[in-house]
Image (cartoon, rainbow, N blue to C red; front, side, top):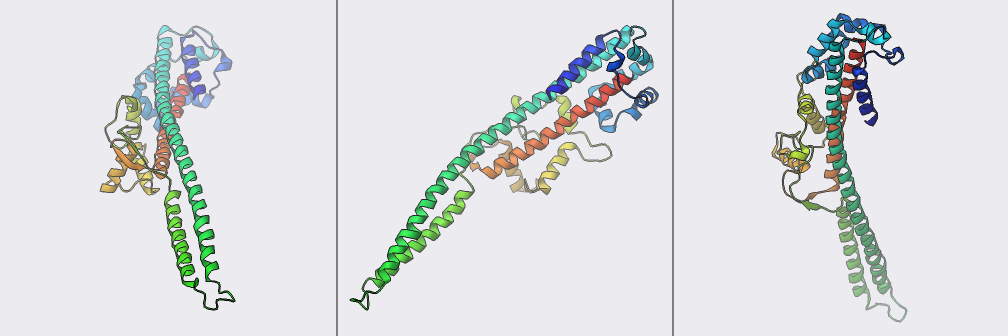
Length: 311
């Protein structure tokens, strides 16, 4: 991500120069011909979609009509002031968008880190409880049952041992206790449950739940997530939710259970003993998916900048 930001800064600086070093302009002749002949042929559909969202198409078309690529590439003459201004304006928009993406990614990374810390703390408590349970199981299943079995053994002086019945009772008690501890161990294996107040995260707006300033998406990124994928009728946000349903991370969103679980994942309702390790796993995986979609913007911005270099 840092490298991408440096690339955008370098692009802005390049735009302000009167002419550029030919060694720095390595786009192929094919790209140049495509860009100069037809802008939409050179931009991939998702990149063209983003360029429209950013209001860059008109600027790119103006840049194309100036036909100053050769000047820019070979430095035969200074670029016109209009060309320099257009390149700088496009570079600033691209840089701003990249920083907005980084802002969203930073917030998501922070929430993923917080989920990891909670899971680690819950895992430590679970491991400590399982260890205590194992010790108790040894005592009940080993010592108590052993004492009961010993008392059932007849002695030579007592052919009909009077301790046989008490021994059976003790042994049975040990077996029941062992079974109870085994069932409790299964419950412990799922980990402890935590409670929490309302604290929206970056999934809140994705699920159309109330969020706050810290979890707000910049307009351009939110429009990108809600734009239909080229060639489909499904938005990126809808595709994310569909994928989560198919993977079983959330129940169907049109059910009461699904709506309740989405509110829990998004942190938009008070949580009383509903924060589990499994829930945190689901939240973390979904945040990673949102982050991946936002990161795709970098690829589209790169495609736009390559077109700028070809014009």
